[in-house]
Image (cartoon, rainbow, N blue to C red; front, side, top):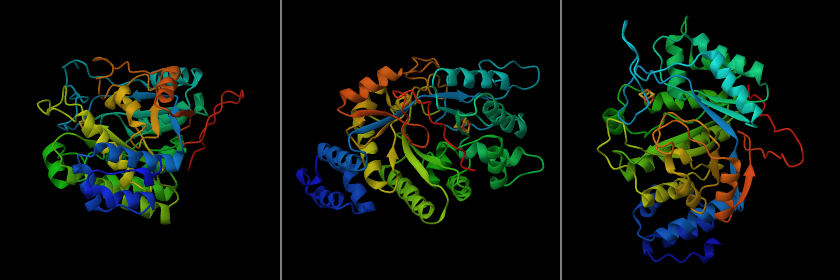
Length: 392
Ligand code: SF4
């Protein structure tokens, strides 16, 4: 739909329709108006316009495999239901685990055989594993599956590695060592909400926005692409979400202007209260999800892609979101241990390629398999899936 055809019933967002049509940058006041309008259908149409002007009716997905190597973590973020405390001597870990490297490599090799182009690897901040565990992991996966793209380790994990490395390494040195071992890109987790109040109340001991941006700035300077996230629907306000998005947009402006790489996509992550210290909160509603996805698309005018991560948003809402600014459905996932809503309490969370393509088609979009760097993967011509080339 052309933006000129959008008829806003809310006078507060009529001027925003014209700005979207003219591809003008939206202001904080615009974002506020969009967040508070009751004319949610116009909001959806505007986000759809912004999405369609970039990608037409294409909706991207990938064949990937998540690997969560440990749930032991030295921190206790209140929104997290994933971490388990590391057992003291003579104690047994109830449901805590750490995967052996052989097991991780076998999982990656199995995924590769099944057509995966990417492994997405994240975990808790393990108190005992040495930095060599992580470099050995990347090296062993690359030796076993040279074409598999390794997207691994959130900014908080990278900062953790600077602290456990001996001698202590800088962020740049950690990233270069991981890249030398086979790392290809960084996921966007750990951003949560860039706000001191929210940080102090929900994840106080975790590094804040400065460290998160430091890691992504250095990654972009080194030519390592990365993603960004926003965990919404807990204690933050709409204004705090808007500030978060503006900070991401400013960082992306700088990366695009003066660094070798940039953010590829933003993934708004819907908070899932179950099992966390914030289980008393209701979490976001469906309208809040759609509103947040749409505002994210409209505010992040310098991000090529906005992703719906279906294990946290649900496949059904992710499908609807394809007409609310979303162009990326993420992937087959297979296993996800960090939240378990879609796995009905288990970590088995998988959509087949046929299921994803059908959901995309039913939403009126064209399914396009991509690799991690958003290059189209053409399997129908018998070509081997593209392997992303290491950026460093
Ligand atoms: S969110 Fe990450 S750092 Fe925080 S407790 Fe969970 S696993 Fe640990």
